[in-house]
Image 1: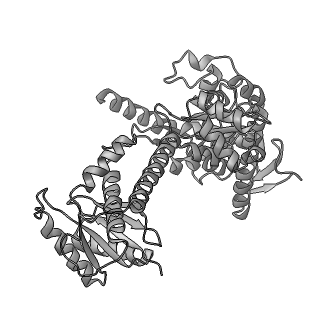
Image 2 (image 1 turned 30 degrees about the vertical axis):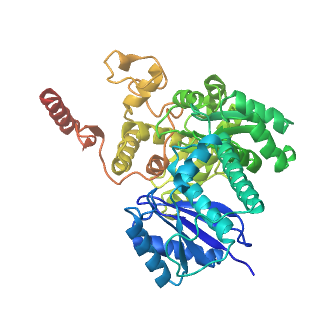
Image 3 (image 1 turned 45 degrees about the vertical axis):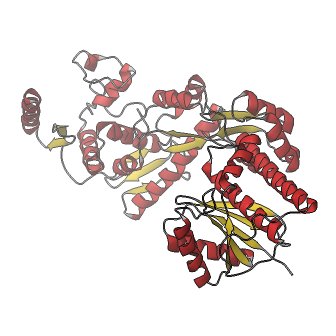
Length: 496
């Protein structure tokens, strides 16, 4: 017949709990509780008793060294009555030396005496072991007071007690040590780790230890050996998060989930800005990106991407081109359903593919993307883009120069602001103040809204626009109205 007992060392802030083995001979530390209320403590102990199928509860009774009951005895007796009301038999046991002895044992074993939770559950184990040794595991429900605390113990019982306590503390010490060695070392701020092809568990463990990601290469190697990880580790780059434990790092390596670098490219970025961001993010070298991307200005979709570190630049450009094609196809499909555009080429995915817009003009995909890039750089407001598109469509229709400031900025090699009169004279095919029609190609990467606006301009006859000083623009049909809007802006600037 199994006889499992629960040992409880009560305290005002913490309650240590221990449990015996099924033979009722050896006590083991179980847990330390920090109850918010007496009812909560009773419920927790009742749940533990049901889960462990215990025969009764050995409750430590606080006493002074002269044998009289301590100040907390009343609270303990109240707890006992609540437990008995919950159907749990209770026996009191003298706990005068249990906490002191538990703390002493932890100190001698190299444990952590300042970790009060360990002291409490160790004290509960001492209390329960004392009952098992002295009472021989015979439970007397309803018993009150000191149960033969001075009874002699024979040598067999004494040896059993000390072997049991020693075993419990050894297990506690080993467990504490393993917890410590598994924790990340101080100063581990995370980073990228490269696992070479064919690297053994030992080599990887030493590499992680040398890089400061784990405390012990031996511990990680043992974990890897136990899990037979030598045949499961994949080469590649992996990201170690700040504060990641050794076992978590190993699980990431076993899962084979290589590290990825997140990079966000805003709408309106030119290829040189993308190159800088790629290099800073650690995706690829900026110069390599420029070589691959320069001829695809405007056709690299601005978005958030996830790349492997140090991926070839051509793979990065391909991913961005593929993303552009996906968005471009969706924009075309929407515009075609509204009758705004008609494809005239067998392929709609090439820069020189031809389309007829609703105004009857034929445009290549490159021309549409070029106009979309100008719209993107002119305004960050979605609600204005179709109107700005209409201004440029109207200017093209009557043979008027585009006079788009961002094209001049692009010709100057950067987004210079403000522009001066001498800047407007720069000799470049991208200078739409001097050249008629669209520039030779896109000046930036347009987003979805600007692409849609380029193929479907608003039905308005505006020819001019200027900043309204509040993040938007004022649009005009006549040059006289435009000059009034310019004067209004200058007055605002002077006031500001």
